[in-house]
Image (cartoon, rainbow, N blue to C red; front, side, top):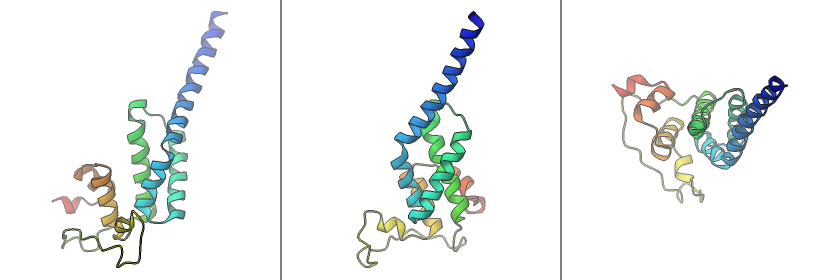
Length: 148
């Protein structure tokens, strides 16, 4: 009799862990979509990126304390696979100069970020907005030569 109770408790615990993961992802959905959009600069691609990340995260388990970081890293990974950002001129790296959104005809809060080239946008969003280290950005973007 006690063995069957133990099995039920294990199943309930497992189900609760999965439900916690889903609930946590749901709570982060808006910020994760915004992150996907800023990386991809396209609503359709952002949606596909988010759906792919949700699919992958549903297959994995991580510690609750790290769930937020893993969700964001999964978004980075899928956006990078979709867009494949590469530096336009790796030998001539200059400071980012954000174009004037009014001159570009854009009047959205993220117009400056969205007007960047794909590689510059990824670096800006990951390092400045998300606080990812330079080394981690280089690893994720597969651009080790730019670090040396």
